[in-house]
Length: 499
Image (cartoon, rainbow, N blue to C red; front, side, top):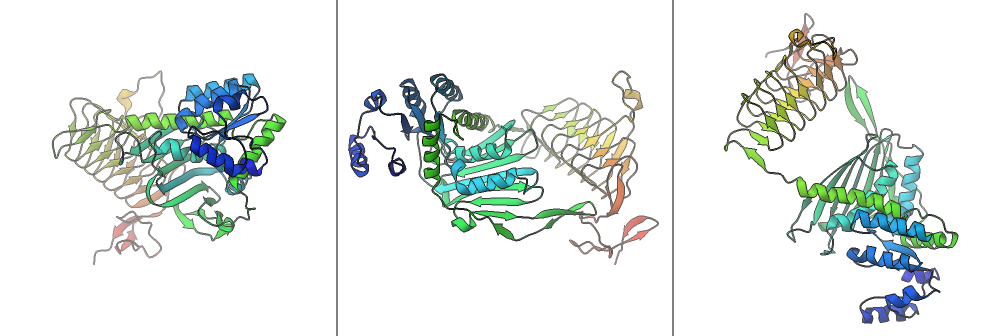
């Protein structure tokens, strides 16, 4: 009401609490009127709705039916279908429908968005936001619907598309079903990942949006003064001997012209009404945000799944996993979501088998092996103790496969020796042996044997250096920087120097 008054557009106020309406009317020099009276008045062109979220859609619908333009605070509705219906109604009536995603109009966010769009940060890899405070607690909506729409709206603008995967988790501390804290994870088809953390049960206020690109990073911190609200860091990642190393840079602060985001937002609404143009945050932008919120809400209802555990010291197997018979699984081993262990396989003690992993048939896996998500360990592969397999690494068991030719009798064996590490998306061509404590870099393609302690990278993989028992890349002195263990190279093999 204050801002519309300052913009010279406020003609009446309404509130179901008549005393509150009277106070505001007197403060702004306009009459307090009933909602039906306002909707029936042909002199009133537009209505701004700031009400409990549960009634946004119904008031917006009545306003559009009355032939008026609508500005409605977020969220547009609590149901995606209702929101889509409002968009169609606004289009058929030829009226502006705008959603109050306030931070889209914040000069700091606009400055950040311009730099991302201009490619200053390179290809966007990762988006992170947190919106934290102590209170105001609500009962008509949870923290996800109350706080997260702003962050999701900004992320959709930065990513220029809708995500394909949404996963969310919640904490309900003050009420049995109303979430006080949520974390939402987003994944886009172009590889961008996003995380939204919101809470009204936090000891202090914090509002940050972080963008990480392959050529730089930026932070929009709304808690900072205007001259420090947007910081750009031209950090970079340098690769040395196949290992990523951070290269840090000082923050560069973006010059921003201070302006009240709400004033910018409502002036934009009035301009759209006058010119009959589409707002930056029109109804369909509100629908896109609601689709993410709805997916997150659904995810929060299904992610808390009980594990089935075979005794206090037995293996833990998620109920979505499949374990055929006969299979041996050692005590303390954990098998997570949607994995499948085929008959004849043997898995040792204290192993961690990630999501969507297939093992077998007849595969041998030692103790304390860690297999990350989306890995298939086929027949003919043996993993000795303490082996680490990174996400989506690949094992083959036939060198020249054809879909039309049955080559199950031609499987070649692959052995990964004790303590070896295989990086994400690496490929191990069958018939190769990975030596003890060797390290295969992410994305490498191994086509021949790898010596113990060798660091290999590339396509095909070549030795780039040596690694210690602790997995540290060794320098020219061949001394492990983590443990101090000393090594030497004899006959092309790395050996530890025993004191």
